[in-house]
View 1 (tube, helix red, strand yellow):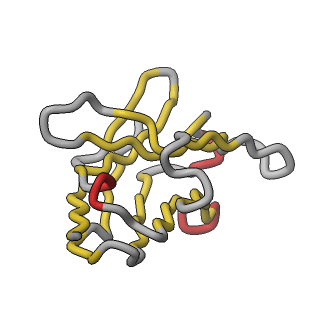
View 2: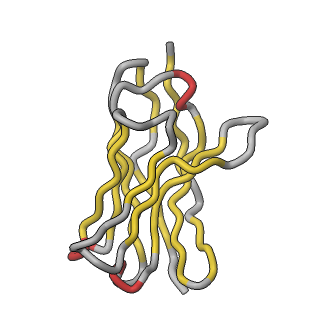
View 3: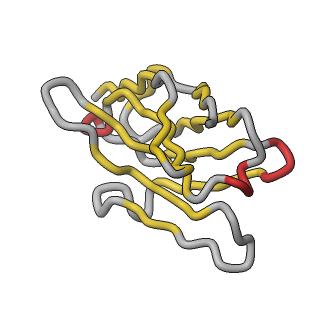
Length: 118
């Protein structure tokens, strides 16, 4: 099992930046995949970015088309944390962002609100 805790959400103007952080309760090297999903009001939860965790020499990253070139997922093995750097934010990026980890089952954080004003 793994517990995931997000931080870093908030209110930002369009064009601005935010960095989300997710702390894991275990060594992230032992987690197959981690990443970020988001859910806007009235919409289904959708993938934002994911990355494999178990091999530093072959990290496979996947981004949603809507965030490619603007968002960057990264990790810090020593701190057991992953991050999502969000640049050039748009109002349509407004959502609750969830940290995700796959370790056999899927695990989720409690979510952090990101609001982008126009």
